[in-house]
Amino acid sequence: MIDDLKDRSRRQLGELAVMQHRINESEKLILKRAETRLDEVNARIQQIRSSSLDQSQEYMNLIKERGLLHMIIAQAKASIRI
Image (cartoon, rainbow, N blue to C red; front, side, top):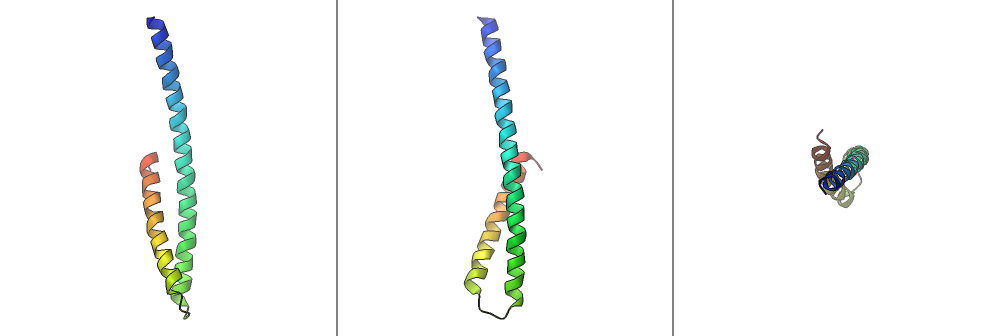
C-alpha cells in the first residue's frame, strides 16, 4: 500500500517534470518568435517614420502590436526566469 503510493507519487513527479520541461521549451519558442517579430515591427516603424507617405493607420497598428509583443516577451521571460 505505502510502496504503491510512493511509486505513484514518483511517477506523477516525473510526469510533472516532463510537463514543466515542455512548458519551458514552449515559452522559449514564444520568446524567440516574439523577439524576432519585435525586430520586424521596429524596423517597419522606422521605415514609416522616415517616409513622407501617410501611413498613419499602419503606424498605429504597429505601435499597438509592439506593445503586445513587449508584454508577451515579459511574460515568457518571467515564466522561464530569464
